[in-house]
Length: 285
Length: 319
Ligand SMILES: Cc1cc2nc3c(=O)[nH]c(=O)nc-3n(C[C@H](O)[C@H](O)[C@H](O)COP(=O)(O)OP(=O)(O)OC[C@H]3O[C@@H](n4cnc5c(N)ncnc54)[C@H](O)[C@@H]3O)c2cc1C
Ligand SMILES: Cc1cc2nc3c(=O)[nH]c(=O)nc-3n(C[C@H](O)[C@H](O)[C@H](O)COP(=O)(O)O)c2cc1C
Ligand code: FES
Image 1: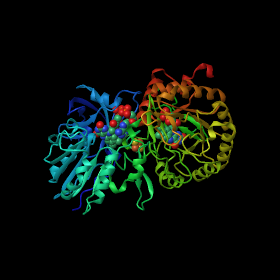
Image 2: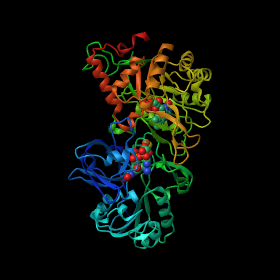
Image 3: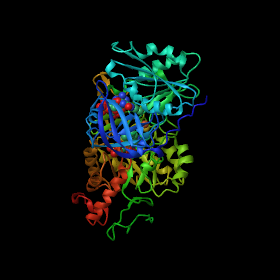
Image 4: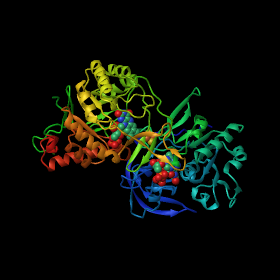
């Protein structure tokens, strides 16, 4: 099985476009999906890539915010983003009304590998980390790749509904309050699921990803893992050099890579997890 | 003066309008709107998001003698109408710039000025010497004012070391030399006079303003180390305007205004207080073609007001 690796991040594919809001749909508790008409970007976006969304005319807030592409329908020219309100920018996006215009810069970054069939891909999503998986699930399904889904969240209302993935999945979940699935963290039930997977794709808080990486690293036979990382971003297109994340160079030496260009999706073994975890959380600002 | 495409008499301008800006030593910018160091890489990153051919100038990322990996993350944090950065001069080193980048700049219509940084005077001189006479390099911008390199001397805040640094670099290169001033100096006008006396052909200002953002939740600054970074964006525009006006009165050489420019109005305001040209920085991060939009707006203004030169905008009190 030689999976097709994602094409490297290529700024020539990015468009600086304006989307028009089609609506903001509530998804469970405190989560929304923002749908935009944005044909230029919808026809280009691939699983795991992200867009820099403009959250207002500025200068406060000043910077665009990065969001994974949740859905992209090239025929209808529609893009969707899945988000929760964590600050001013996300509050503004969640309050968009039909017809409002939103700056969309993308697609950006390097996305997930879509495996070649026959294969089973296990998708692991913590909280808002569910965002990139509908697009990935649909791309895999179209190719004949089988899917398993492991979702963890604080409570049942915060899980991403599996039926919204748009592809059949073997579904598993964990909630911290035990309101659905296993009580606890998704990492508590990850181990046994690896036996049936040929490949794993994960997205969620960096701390969760580190645990997923350490569990996957111990599994035999070895299962390739890709993770989608987060970093504070100034530009999203490789110019400000602001989004460095610690990685291991070929010889294991300390190095840094740009999350927006080399990532956000990276092979787990490339990430320097201990240095990454030593950093203060990006959103603690 | 060089003949420059898009120069005097180009369509859309009143007869006799000259959009070019002379910097000195034979360097003339085709128009006054450039892109600022550290916000446009080496001119290759943005592709079609901001075509480079109509820009007035590209000021590259700060370049040192050897490659530098930059600071540990986090490196950027948003603040009201601004952002802090502590990139730490991540760059590939002057050898890569000279060997791989300069040949690609040779055919560009836009002049590329390499922003030079260093930990001591010897490093500035070594970088300048390696760029001297390299085809594709139109000039140097000496960054004597980077606040983000731990242990790095801030030559820019004191007139005497600033002048020593500039004099040493001046002796090492025949390239047009722009010296970038720090807004963190006690008296920016004194530093400006000193660097012009030491051989600067022009000055640019401002670099970022030292700032700090606190995370109450973490009980510490957001950025690592001492917690400080360089503040840029609209928040610093009034500071930059004040310093440009002050420097304009102090020196005769061309002044390039920088700080929070997002619109043509912002850029024209800098010209009113004495800037001959401007650089667009942080605005490129949110609007990749911001500099081109600023240029278009400035040209429309010139046309509307039938300017003969950008100088016509200058506040009369500045002479
Ligand atoms: C590649 C990538 C993809 C992302 N995809 C999604 C997604 O699909 N859905 C979703 O809900 N969130 C996603 N995020 C996180 C999202 O960008 C932040 O939650 C958002 O920027 C917060 O903005 P705010 O104004 O609401 O919060 P504020 O806290 O006011 O933001 C202040 C600053 O901090 C930065 N910041 C805050 N939180 C984060 C964070 N967690 N990660 C990185 N930077 C942060 C912002 O960029 C901003 O500059 C993604 C982040 C990255 C890097
Ligand atoms: C991310 C970032 C990196 C920068 N790097 C450099 C640099 O390497 N050398 C330099 O002289 N100035 C650097 N600057 C300063 C800018 O060139 C400019 O002086 C400053 O940002 C103010 O302009 P602005 O408000 O338009 O951004 C950097 C600024 C930012 C935001
Ligand atoms: S966000 Fe600017 S380089 Fe990655």
